[in-house]
Image 1: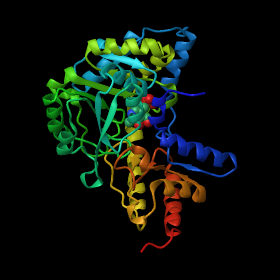
Image 2: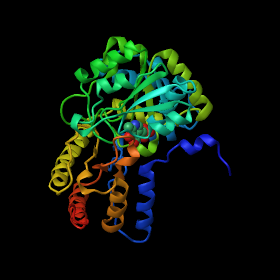
Image 3: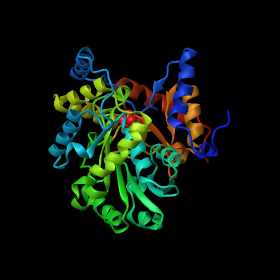
Image 4: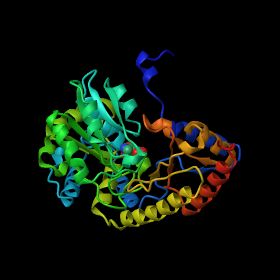
Length: 389
Ligand SMILES: Cc1ncc(COP(=O)(O)O)c(C=O)c1O
């Protein structure tokens, strides 16, 4: 069937493409080490599952208010208060996944042709911006600057049509972190040019060194910031589909209209589980973070031990984004051949926007055993490539 013309410009997710090929190989009996997906390999903590079970038994099986169950919106406000950010439940909307929060926010913020400034390499925002009629404008970062947003490049990308600046730190795919001091001049530019800021904070519990700044901690930013977060990464709840946005109450009301028109609400028993996640014990988060950090250190050291691969040590999230530029092979060919010949699934950097080519993304949300195996297999693969001149 013929789809709308705009669909031609909407790229499919490169992660899902690799995943599909990896699954196909698995079906034919191959063992695959999955380092392509951004999904915690930990199970959801038992007390969170228990809360969902109890909610189901109590009959929490109906529609909920569009913006979310009041108690969860309050729990999220409390969670922000603990970080020194004063908001109320009216500043919160709960959605099926943080992804849908981003989608509702963009749909509520953009008029056709509005430009969205996106530091790149970046996650799959391009498709979302285009679907709602906006125009992505990429600001290319570099490994030399640890993939942080460069203020001069930001200023150079702003036009009269610029409407929103999309920040994602800790970053997917680079793991870059931006401190409050790093963010300050950038947010000043946003204020000067009357830009909204969408801050995708989904990895903000996964910071290993230094601190991640939060735009909401800058008083003049509250009126122009949409902060996105969720439960997928912090509480290993990817499949539950629950996330949220924090923004000025009038903007949340507009986002709620989009949620009402698209998914109605997030499943009630899942929202009850999310309350347990926020109000229950938090040791899981710290233990998970410590384990990711150990894995990151092993992976970065292993990759840097391979001739032709250069890997920065990312400060956050659970990805490394090594450069393969010295190998003289495209990131797509690298990932396809690595997967087919050695059974290690990685994502080509070319799928993460300008600045991504010449890199590959590997997720360390997999066991230490798999990471060590993968390093050896990548080494064998690289050593088997034709000699470089
Ligand atoms: C940067 C970023 N934002 C948002 C999400 C989506 O999270 P959720 O599972 O809550 O939709 C992801 C998931 O990979 C991500 O990497």
